Length: 339
Image (cartoon, rainbow, N blue to C red; front, side, top):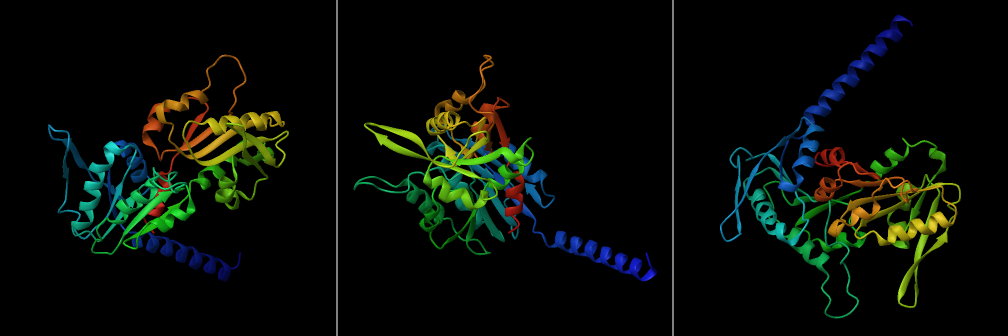
């Protein structure tokens, strides 16, 4: 290598180093509060960045059951960037968290961000007859009424909301940021053996519309539901799963009935393995148990079942039970807090 070339290389390396230092210095420091359910996820988020500091809240109740709350270090967060990690896992916990969420922006903070990984009423977004209540709209109204901070409207980070049109349910007082867990899935799929045999299946047209552009590097299979009498039957609409490891992709799972029916259809059409990914493992009434490997010597229906940690109670319940694997949103949330 000539002397000039060596000097140029040294100058370039120095510039890259300086740019990296400047980039780090420009990152904002975020004070992250969290609800009790999200403590583990909050700690994982903080471990992803030196610019995130965890803060605490005393979550107590009066004798009558109503919240008795105290935000610690309220004076210390003045002029600082503040975020709150929420989990609206049931109506019982929403009120106490909303009480905190409505107060934090008013504590003279520089900016406020609500991190709500799972928007829980997203699947109740439309009316089919007069009198039905679209609670997705109600929840969006509650979130839209968060007070502005000194820095302006609240940013709201949500992952894989059920229907894309729900972004229009939020009023102009907040700035929704819609993120996705799909990059976590694609990274995990690249780690599998025989990745060339992996194809993606969508349980219905809605899931295809939602995710196919994010997974266009994989061949696809689309299922559909057809009505036969009083039953809705899952059928293969397009694609060929024969000889492949098929990964069913959807935004959320409740009872899991549709996923099980899809697995049966895909296996009947020659899939060698079937796995599943959902961003939100809701699983009411411990319905995740129907997917666990029972060690009974029989071939299991699902090779892998990937979920994220957007529903902390589910993550705690399933532990390390096969076929479940948790793909953490912590790194993605840490990055989103810098936007």
